[in-house]
Image 1 (cartoon, rainbow over the protein chains, first blue to last red):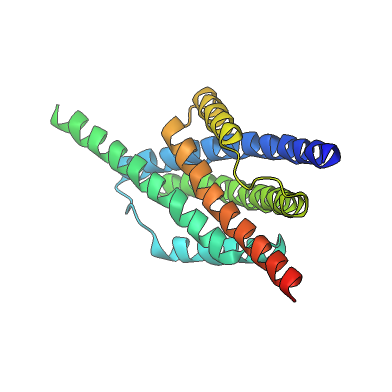
Image 2: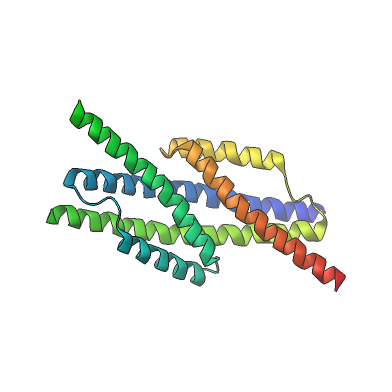
Length: 102
Length: 102
């Protein structure tokens, strides 16, 4: 049992390192998508791009397959992240509208 | 507008690289948590550990703050991932039960 707890502590140290990497990757991803939101708002580009989104889903499912991650989970994960991106873009658009109105 | 599209393509290349990193980090995280699930099932360790979970939430919120990521999003993300971990652990427990019954 002492051995099992030591092994568990080892796995948890890995999980903590991976979580730190995930948080920093997500922060960087949102830095990029916020910049995209500003660019689209400034240049009147359409906020949604269904063709790009379909490509992203297909690519992430393939990457997940290769990495032995459930492709359905990868797609759910992308949808989870994209919902947050849309929230940010709505905030950017609202701030832009307020700036123009102000 | 041509410039805006070139800048957009650059951001998208970064987003695609980050997504590949995220998928691989998630795959590795689930490799660890599946090993934890097997370890806990084999050694009769309790599946849930509320103290550990509280530490993880507090740590991820702090990491998110430092990385300029919304801490509420970081907590939602952890919950999203943990729901998948629980699903895997239930599968492991069911497979263990089936093996013992068989």
